[in-house]
Length: 219
Picture 1 (cartoon, rainbow, N blue to C red):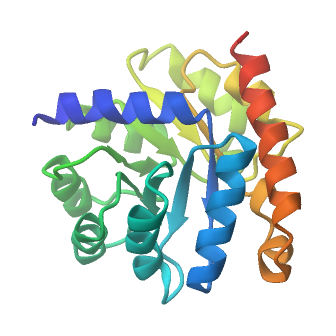
Picture 2 (cartoon, rainbow, N blue to C red):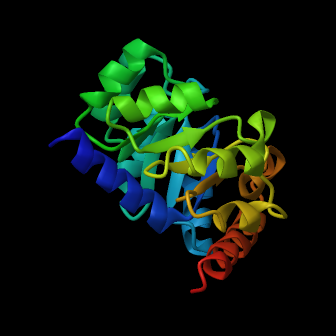
């Protein structure tokens, strides 16, 4: 499948998600419970970060046990991690940034990818390789809404998933931008809730986030 078709699929996945919870877990039980709570709350897709020793095993487990959850592997930093995530069954891949060698590898990946960038120059380099669905990270630190509005004119074909510093209060403003296909956030998967097993809090926050998506899209 061509990169263009994989990017079409990435756009479909992120559009369906609306808000992509950025999830970090330390046990398989945490991964199972938090993903189920998010799904029950109305958020069907997650970005599972590869920041902990259990992450790759958790990814594979979620694909086996919770097939209704769309699982993206996040914080993919190396080609080795990319291949491990593919082998574990990831539905898509997300990088926080994309050096040239990673961009080359991602362009050949057999599944949708959302490469990360933090500047117009980086975004243009990704567009030149055929990517038109990109993660803007860290979104608020690099200009937030002003950056997103700024790149909409010169790169009209680019769709963004801004992540980093976005809150429940600002989510709707980001989703209302014409070049934003999805946003990433962690306010609905707070570390303390995961650590303490407060899955009802996760579910309620996910439901509120899903309502924000519907309101922003006029659904």
